[in-house]
Length: 134
Image 1 (cartoon, helix red, strand yellow):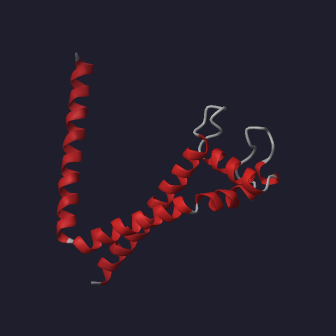
Image 2: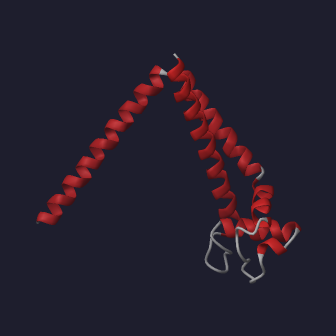
Image 3: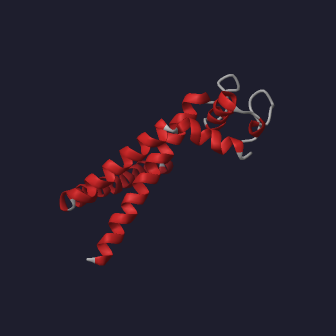
């Protein structure tokens, strides 16, 4: 019973922390609507750009030799054109579908999320930095 009670206490504490975080986040957005909007817009814009440019981003990464080999065993940096792009996206997505990875779609998703996270982090950093100047 001790383990079960400890687990319930842990989950209850976690729910309480998440609830407090949600309340403080809502209060922060209410106090700073312009900054919150800036963060949202920047996140969506950078995620959208990363999604739109996922193919050339992946090809650039693949051509550097950072991604290893394609599912066929060929070094990705020795490929060119659409083969380079597709192999790079698949490698970023965890490997080809045939090999049990997420394939090209997962690669685009990863790059989109990384782009959105970079935009969010940058805009949060800029808004926090602007608070110091006030």
